[in-house]
Amino acid sequence: MEPKIKNRLTWRLRVMLAERNITTATELKRRLESYGYEITSSQLTRIIKERPERISTDLLDHLLAILRCEVTDLLRLDPIEKDQGGDDQPAPVVEKSEQPQKRRVRRVPDSEDESSDLTGPKITPFPISPSK
Image 1 (spheres, rainbow, N blue to C red):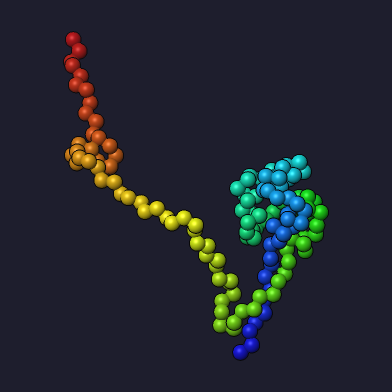
Image 2: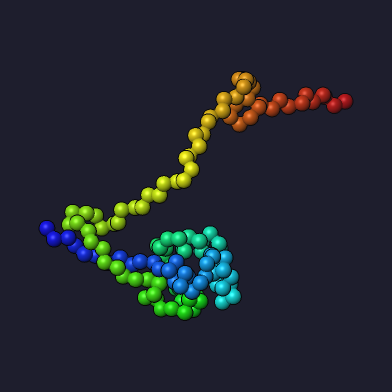
């Protein structure tokens, strides 16, 4: 069988930033703020690192103004070859973490106190003497 050719949008923000000598997310954030667009650092970093599932047209307008480019410079339609029997979604990219995960150790209490449970120790009210 002949493989199907499908197109996929490629997010090229990192390439455009490199071509414009914008080297950090902080610098891009500063430029966006000077144009009057507010965005958190974590949102901006996520948009730079990977292709966003959704992007507001307002942010896209500001990125195009800062980078002095067209939409086709940021989003490119690239062909992808897939086998006929394969699914439509591309295989997820699994990145190995550089540091091994630490094992979590469950700590056991030193003493088993019957007057306490998961909510804490039982509370005993103070005795109230009868008033005269």
